[in-house]
Image 1: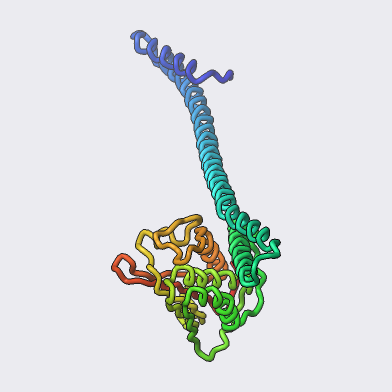
Image 2: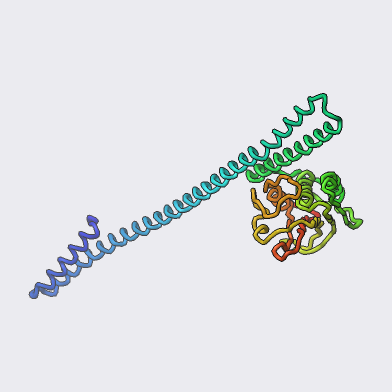
Length: 329
């Protein structure tokens, strides 16, 4: 039998049914014959309808799948666009900071070098100029290192080199490195720790960068003749997975202006400017703490800041807590 289109079958079925209703003189055999024809046409109509329904269901399923794929593609495109915009904005900020914060120190170094060529200047002036060139160069190097670390972290190219680290020795070296700057401002750094060795697993260079950033900030924002208290202790409590774990906790407390609640919201973001200002004209780039947080989290640790500047209470305490054992995720 020729398979008719569903609409054609429906039309013929309706026409035959109407003719039967209009004919009053049909015999029983004729009615039975007409009934068989109607059943045949109804079967054709049913089959065609089912075929259309199956095609429709398949088409709808395919359309839903295509719509879902399109939505995912659009979401990915939007995500990639946002990343590109953020990286482009960050690149612009990095270039702006580099241009602004490196230009003036470079100009100072060039001027001081030219002055040092003058054989008539006194030895004390030469010594002062050399000291300024050295400190200026260190500030520039710190900025460049922070910018490079920022780029590496954002691109996921910063791979830690894990080894056994004596955290007590590392902190002692950081304190020695910052003592000269603290003494220049008349500040005192105290160090309290227990007799524990504080051995842990981590990247020594990256952890040094974290600790140096926190302590140098304390020196930078503490007032002249201020006090900076450094402490190192062992602690034990459940980690983020609820497993009991040993940690080392570094705390650096200063008596600077402190942090407002608004400052705390921006504290670990890139290129953020806070309400507090360095107390001796030092540079503040808004990069170091963001890098420090990334590095600490890379070591499965936590970095926090406590301060109550809004309540009129000066000072801030920065703490870093690191697990004794480490599995880089």
